[in-house]
Length: 282
Length: 215
Image (cartoon, rainbow over all chains, first blue to last red; front, side, top):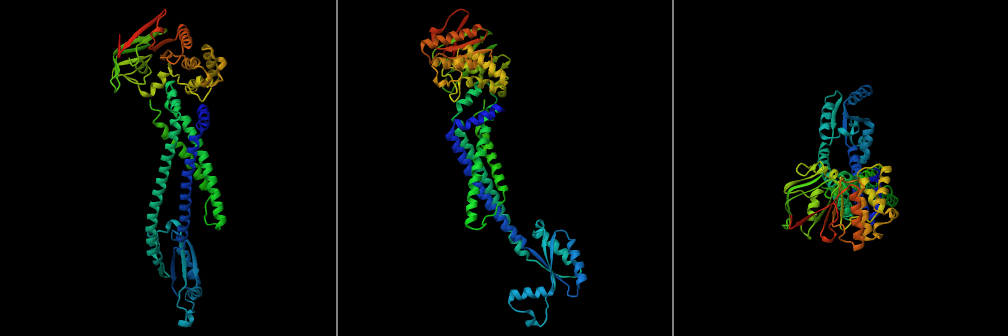
């Protein structure tokens, strides 16, 4: 094993040009993958904020007093999937009306017909049309609930587009990754072709396939680590500059750097493993 | 030890071997002579199982080409020493590393490795040049590095494919003396050459091959 590590490390310097090309290709692939990942994560944040706004409005029977309303709140809370309940009193409803229509409801009707209500948000995993429908059924069955309002059509449309977007993102991501593996593997093949003599001599002196393969895979691992470190540095720099220019335009978690490192290691390992296969056959 | 039984092998060009049988016994020195393209290298390739016969079978030690699984080829080659006309050395490392490399890929322990490499380099008279890159050595010296590399695993037989083909007469004589010395110490040698002048001497057997047939 020590031999493989030594040889793998020495290999980086023996074929400097092809090593640099391989590292550049890994860096470039990871930058493309990284930008795509950041785009996906940021799109997801937009989607989550839209989903956060999906709320049910439960109108309470006008005859219900404070005690009964509190009891109703408890009963609603016991339904599975409820995240939060916000009480809107009749006065608050009138205030919302005034804000929306710029007119006081008392001026139009001389009374406030708006019922008090609960604005209910659902737990993230229950924010689908199917779950929402079943929760609405349960809410409607409760005493004291006059009506439940929910813009289900928006959710259904949203879900449809989300499914399409998910398929597109997964396909593009998958293709990007496959393309990167292919590209890195072919670049590493150039490194290997430059050292075909070494492989042939190894075969002549009785090295097993795994022994021949190992130094090249270790070299691929080093190239992956260097390539991903460079990609991380470049991406970090770019994001810093963009976020200074346009205040916090892009939000990312530090995990993305870890993902890029893992991806780089994976690219280096799989690329070299695939590239060497053809040359180690006896 | 090495037996070829009724071997036939043909390349797509048509050249190859037809019904060749031969044997090399422990401690023997066997010359395989013949003109270029006669099939000498093919015989050697069959022995180190780079190619497999269409008919007949090859036996090397406990390995039989008919039952041979490809994953055992490395184990067979560890029992052989092979040298070529073009030396096949690695010019990105020193003489020592070229020889040590064989033991490294076969997983020898570091201490044992050092001892064996230095011993074999002394045997071929290159101890003093162990740290040099082989590119700076003469042809004869490079072939001696190749011989050291072939011997370091203590092979049962040394296969030499035109080992003097690239050398001047002085270096040729040196290499021939070295091969003889190795043989006297007990390692069998099978040397393919087209140079009839090299052939001869006591306790040596000569096999002639022409147009893929043993004469």
